[in-house]
Image (cartoon, rainbow over the protein chains, first blue to last red):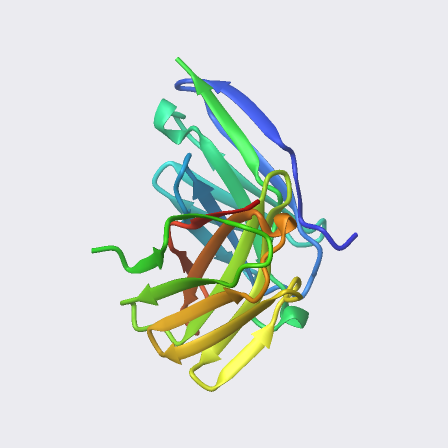
Length: 112
Length: 112
C-alpha cells in the first residue's frame, strides 16, 4: 500500500518498556523518523535513522530498522507518564522530493 | 524564543473568507513546509519550498496558495475558506542533510 502504517493505540504501565511499530512503504527511503506530539503542541523530532543502519540508540530510545520487511520500531525503556503522547513514524520518500510521509500516529497512554 | 513561530495560533472564520496563516523561523533553514493535521489522518503536506524562488505543491494543495516572502517567512493562504479546511495547520523547516524537520506550534483553524 501507499500508506505508512502504525497501530493507533498502545497502553503501558509506568516503568515498563513501550514498543511502537511502523511499516513504511518505499524501500528506497533514505531516512526514517520518529516524532512526538504532546497535547496541544507541535511535533517534536525524537530521533531518526539512516537506511544503512539497523539500530540506533539514544538514551531511553532504541530504534530498530528492518529494511527487508520495511519495518521500523521505537522502543522506550522505563516508560514514564510524561511519555504519554502521540508518536508519528515518517519516511523520507524519494519520489516525493524531500517531503516526509507520516503515519497516522500511535497514541501512547502510560498509567501509574 | 521559539525557532519556528506561527500566527495566529487560533482562528475562527466563515465560509468564503480569505485567510492567511504566517510562519517565521530563526533556524536559518532554506526549506519550509506547510502541513495540515486532521484527526485520524496524520499529517499531510500542502506545499513546500526549498528556497525563496522555489515553490512546490504537496499532496493536498487544492484550495491553498503560498508565498515565500523571505528565507525566514512562508505564508499559507486560503483564498476562499470552506468548512472541510477546518484543521490544525503546521509549518515546518528542514535542513538539507537528513532533512530533519522542525515544527511550529500549529494554528487551529475553524471554518464555519
